[in-house]
Amino acid sequence: MTPPPAVTAAILVIGDEILSGRTKDKNIGTIADYLTAIGVDLREVRVVPDEADAIVEAVNALRARNTYLFTTGGIGPTHDDITADCVAAAFGVGIDVDPRAKAMLLERHKPEDLNEARLRMARIPDGADLVPNPISKAPGFRLGNVFVMAGVPAIMQAMLDQIGPTLETGAKVISETIEAGNLPEGTYAGDLAAIAKAETAVSIGSYPSMTPTGFANRIVVRGRDAVSVARARDAVIALVERLRGGTGA
Amino acid sequence: MTPPPAVTAAILVIGDEILSGRTKDKNIGTIADYLTAIGVDLREVRVVPDEADAIVEAVNALRARNTYLFTTGGIGPTHDDITADCVAAAFGVGIDVDPRAKAMLLERHKPEDLNEARLRMARIPDGADLVPNPISKAPGFRLGNVFVMAGVPAIMQAMLDQIGPTLETGAKVISETIEAGNLPEGTYAGDLAAIAKAETAVSIGSYPSMTPTGFANRIVVRGRDAVSVARARDAVIALVERLRGGTGA
Image (cartoon, rainbow over all chains, first blue to last red; front, side, top):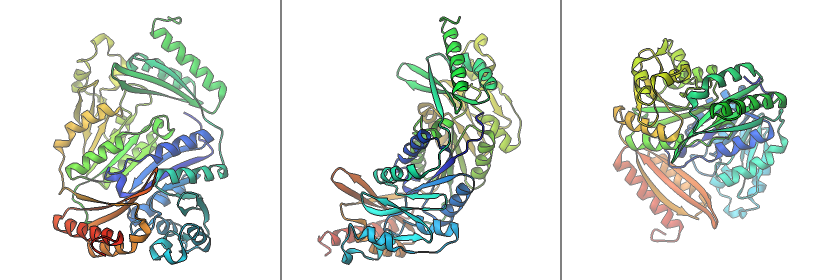
């Protein structure tokens, strides 16, 4: 097992459309890649519907046990966009139209077009910092350790790019992938477990996938200590080569 | 709001590889589509790492408040495959090699190849029913209201196809999509909220997406009562046509 990492994160995806299958989420994978690259350990993901109780409960559960929580979705102008109100409720703070956010909306909309619905997008919980939205202007925000982002992937990405440099980060995880190809997992599982048990500073996973010609298995060694990762990687390579009847046999 | 549906479900995705971003989950969308089609309401999704405490906690939280829980991942032969043990722990039941599961593995492996690692795939919690795996034989299982499936999408799909007909299902959700095109959400949000407030038997969502030429917005009306859905749909169509300066203006 990897020792407890210093900087952790959770993602909360908010939206009926993901749970109905109508929209296929792309943000989880994008954020996961991003956090891994900067040394933040993604620990948990949840997807909840557009319902206040579910959102507030998830926000409070996830922000309490992680360094950061990232939410996506539910910050548009329509009645089903309730993320900002729910985050305010989760923190027990007020929420109102924020002059800074309203000014951002006025970069895109004429004052006479800034109707009640659009002003919803300027409702920001008290004490939050804004995350500018270069695409459609309606901002995300940060309150405490919670970052609230849009659900549209291009806008989420633009917000994440701005948030990233502000994050505290931990030691980056070094990841080494060993291709086991069509070598069955069952042939190496026992010896792999022994390596995993000996190398306490790394985590080792075996990931089968299917191709048109059969299984294609990969073994991934991950950890924050370069020496341990390299030693475990070499042990796995030797194991795979031995089983293939190669040099180590 | 839709009245509380009779049959609900949650998904628990188990695997470090999803949280690191190395593998992009495809199972959530597949299961969401499947459940929606048969009238089961997906209420929540969680993704957790290959860690016993996290898996047991999530299994118990999700099975307690849903009709069904579907898990994916962590049922292979390697040391990081701990789902079956965690489900047994969550239910407080024993786990051991199941003769029925072993017989399934022997359809693929010679007896002399059925080593300790492969036999791990025949470890099934006491009292569980098996879900056959037509592709690589190692079965999934059902224990109480929890269905344990493989993480490899093709195998997960094969298991889901067998599980589906055994599920209790509710009234199917009828879904109507109205294309709002590049009509800005902010122009229709107020009137849409009024329709949503009046039509208490349906849920109405507005979903922006971006195309190379700008926003492409969709309004989705969902519910189990055909008359209510049709009435709300017609109201939304009239709203969109009016705003476009069309027939309803």
